[in-house]
Length: 264
Ligand SMILES: Nc1ncnc2c1ncn2[C@@H]1O[C@H](COP(=O)(O)OP(=O)(O)O)[C@@H](O)[C@H]1O
Ligand SMILES: [Mg+2]
Image 1: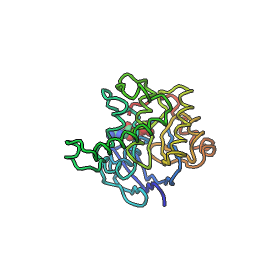
Image 2 (image 1 turned 120 degrees about the vertical axis):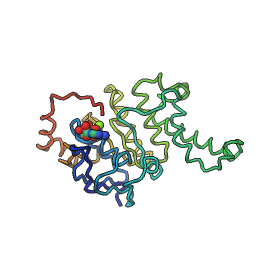
Image 3 (image 1 turned 180 degrees about the vertical axis):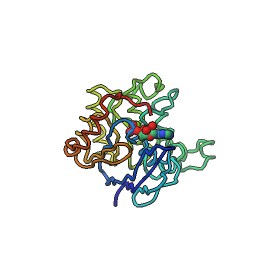
Image 4 (image 1 turned 90 degrees about the vertical axis):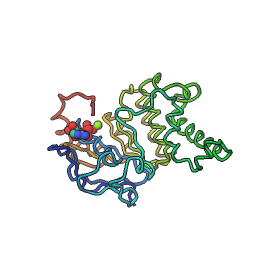
């Protein structure tokens, strides 16, 4: 059974058709990349899957069960967590607290145990802490030791991205949606994050759908690539096949005068 199934999904904003009849599947343990020029509908697709937007029509299923109409928090609990193109961290809180927060509502102990700080509560808290450290350690020493307790606002942009990825992993999700994980990273950091994404799958067991502009990263880790243009899927296949597809070249070349960075 597919981990994620998107079937004939449509979404428009006023007169603009942002997603048109989009269908694809992601299998358990796959790394699938979504590419396409600015405005192609990549972030909209993530917003549809994660319940930020509701499709006008079509089906979205996680392991065979519909997630259409569910709220973003419910979808996280069902197993899909994401990172954002524009980061959404609590910048005044520490690295560790940012990774602990999404786990708090999952605490399986009654509220009064938290108030009284019973052994049961302290045990649950210790496990959350353990899980946070395990996810943060995916990024090597970069977020560990003294960094754990630093407020996010002192971190480099690359470290903020890493913290957001650790937070998504710590939700307990089985599928991760990464929106431009290497944005703002230099070539060395991009190579490193490429390897980490692969380890997230190989060692962490996550299924990964990612949006990315850096083609070396996409080519390096993707089992499959989906190309969007004006909200439609124009190609799907191996990295090699899609980058040599005339439709894909045309989609990109037609827009070469546009800026690389996005604001959406
Ligand atoms: N909430 C919204 N309201 C109106 N238009 C939107 C909204 N979200 C996205 N769009 C439009 O949908 C199109 C696809 O945007 P987006 O999904 O952000 O593209 P991408 O991430 O591929 O650059 C763009 O034309 C964008 O302006
Ligand atoms: Mg986008």
